[in-house]
Length: 117
Image (cartoon, rainbow, N blue to C red; front, side, top):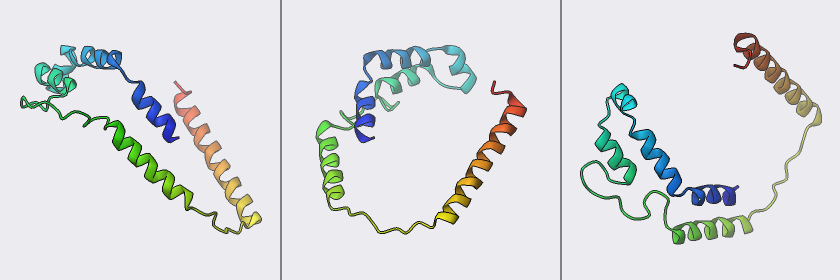
């Protein structure tokens, strides 16, 4: 999961930033929410709104920080041991049945009210 999250974070590129700027530049949304278009554009470029640029690596973090965090996570995972947990099969079956009943009831209620639209 961590590798997937890192891959998604690293996948964002200039195209993503361009789309955010385009979306932020729409004056209708700025008027609707009372935003200053110039301040919004500056924030999307990394400024804090007072003319100061954001420090490099502040949003996504540097690769060395990610490497250290991953190393610590792996080091802690290496020391982990499986805990002895006893399973009570009758209670497990009751909880599974109750969970499925709640899931079906919620799904039916949602279907009746919205028809999933």
